[in-house]
Amino acid sequence: MRYHQKKDLAVLVAGSSPFNDTVILELLGAKGPVYGNSRIGSVTAVVGEATERRLGPRKGVSFVRGDPTDPAVLEKAGARAADVILVNSYGADDGEGETRTIRQALLEPRARPKKDAPITVTGRQDEAGAGNEGAFLHCVEDIFTRIIAQSARQRGLARVYRELLSFHGNDFYFLPGRALSGTTFSRSLRAFANACPVGIRRSGKTTLNPPMTEEIGPDDELVILAHSLSDVMMNPAILPVPDESSISREGISTMKQESYLFLGWNRLCPGILGEINKYSHKDSIAGVTGEGAGELGGLPRFENLSLTGLAGSCADDGFLDTIPWEYWENLVIPGTAENGDGSAVERLSAVRTALATRGFVNNLTAVSWKPGEEDGLEDVLPVTLVFRILAQLALNPELSGVINEITSPVGAEIYLKPVENYVVLDKPCDFYTILESAKRKGETAIGYIRNGETAPVINPSKAAKERFGHFDRIVVLADEN
Image (cartoon, rainbow, N blue to C red):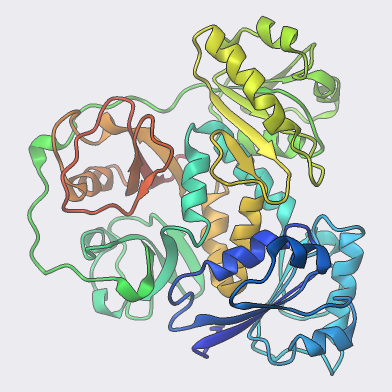
């Protein structure tokens, strides 16, 4: 089903989630067309006075005070005329109950939305309640569990997620494939001056990093990464050939045993370990400290990941000094998974100090559960990222196929791989050459991340020549499972 035939969309956000600040700011930050030719025209919020006070007066958003479970309040907020509705009560007192009641209220004639208005609902999928046929249900904790597991495996991946999964920077778009009909996906990689093709959407199914020989059909859509859909430019038919002398003939293997240390424990950790197991190679290991060590006996045996407990607490600086960091490549501080918890971020400095004292630079992921946590903090993975994703899914439900694929072991995932696997070090080369080198490995290159820099470069200028060093990484879509 295709949504949003209007040019200016009326968006309604309803619910008492403390994370609705992030949702509204993400919606207001959407640039240009967000779906086809549609743009956000207005945002109306029934989100409680606390959220209204935190955000303050803002251009483009109108606050309607009252109970979001009351059909009369939803009617006043324009539910019947809304083009997009997002119900978010995650983290509120009795959030699941409020979600069910809001959905029931939207069934009342006075508040019932148009049939073609997509309704996005957050919460636990198995408790989301009845009603609103065709509503899109998204479990916040399921999405975040998968993102934590992925980020724990690769240093810098959290920064790539922040760039890709929000309206700040490059976004995923669907582009009609008619202009490239009959050509292969491989040929499409060089077709755009300022966009990166990453997949094909056919008959409602999205495939990222498809076989390079896959032919694009007249009814297919090309999944692209671009700064704005309205600015995408086709390349001329003839481009310079890739620089063969710059393409690396050797590489560093990324298939190896992995090690993880969980500095803390919460109710989501079994699921995070289960996700890590799906990606890990045989004989990988995960250690768990504190109370989590006592929980290991109740977990199922994992095929690729063995578990071990360490006596001690992340809150104890003395214990941190005794950890053999050289055996634990990837460190996770998971926090408590309770709304408002910032304990992982608070302990981040102590862990960094313990590592630096002994000369180690491990992959470190501290999970923040605080509303309003800044997304750009180094080594911090905030739950607010999920609500940025949900804002995108509300505007474009068909993006769920993209999000699901890059955060699950089925299909292509995002990898940060050594530069020397693609091009010769310290030799100027353009991104067209990197695209060609990745293509020969069955991968789709989408950018790079330089050692020591906090922000990745996604969808870079393809003609500009750059030099790369040993610690730089190429960002690719690949299927290693």
